[in-house]
Image (cartoon, rainbow, N blue to C red):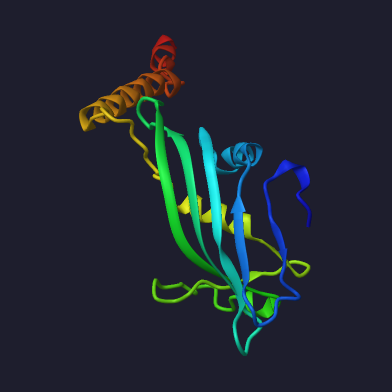
Length: 188
């Protein structure tokens, strides 16, 4: 449960968490931001800040993390690969439990609706990694199709048409293994 393998993590011991909430305030160093760049598969993570609290819910073994994650990062444009800066600020809450049965879904067709809360995450050896949870929130908030300024829809459509033509040209050459079969059959 350590910071093994150079992966940015912050393990918090929640076994001794009482009725009082525990405040979390994490600011990533430059090297930790570099590690997050690989975790998120982006060009650059320039900043990361996690601020929130952990609190045990009354009458249950559930621990709730309520936090805000703020991050500045750069992605590559889907058309031109130019850098696209993005600022993310997400409020989120996540529940954790030590009870393995609380996270098991018995029905294989179980679907979580938007109104329901997610299943709690499992607490491992009395500790949780709050950075991992925050990085997941950043990944969910990332623009799936970042575009640089000045890239227009027509450029995207043109790029798609060009790539489709290239695929068709490759397909024509690749998928004609019996093109000369007719000539061979006529020679007999």
